[in-house]
Image 1 (cartoon, rainbow, N blue to C red):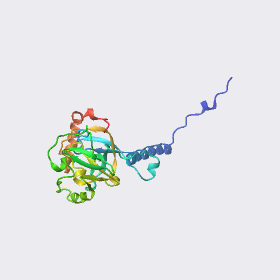
Image 2 (tube, rainbow, N blue to C red):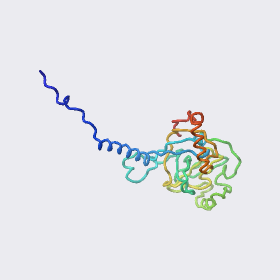
Image 3 (spheres, rainbow, N blue to C red):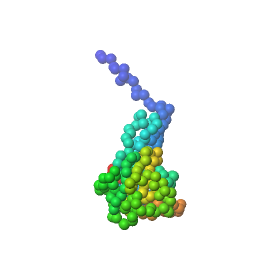
Image 4 (cartoon, rainbow, N blue to C red):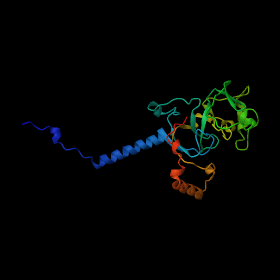
Length: 251
């Protein structure tokens, strides 16, 4: 007659209530950590990045890429911002406003446009992601020549002069030059200046949801208008969701 294994006689230990609470707290802390330091959700409010990003695209943003300081750098992946990266950042002239643009110039780069073509350090860029044709606006197409629209950012033309070098704009240390993919409608570094490194939030990773949103929705800031739009989303969730854009990588 064989003796029974002691382990077989042991009953499975039941989880106590304190252990259950501790498990829930661990999940919540992990979720808060991820949302705070790893990813963040954003909605695209304007058409300046069409057709790469459309109005109503909802994206998850990688907050780790631009993280260049603090203890988190020791435990989290990090790389420098590169040419062509799409970034989300706090607008340098409108604090509290989040903007998304493509990085055209890194610190030390010399930038100018000629007939709508971007030249970086004397070489023309090939930009297959661009949308739109030339509108003939001198400053927009031949930056930094001409006189910019100074109504919204009147201080930029004077500041810009300090960075002009033989017809190029020199990007200063710890700053970037960003532009939208829809150049004809994009208010970008041509109009308000450089993007400070510390303003960068992260890089959009992928579109997790996309809803067909009116182009003027950003201007509808009244409470009743917001409620109307929420009801519109509820009523048209299935037929207005752009299912084909969901989970697309942002490049």
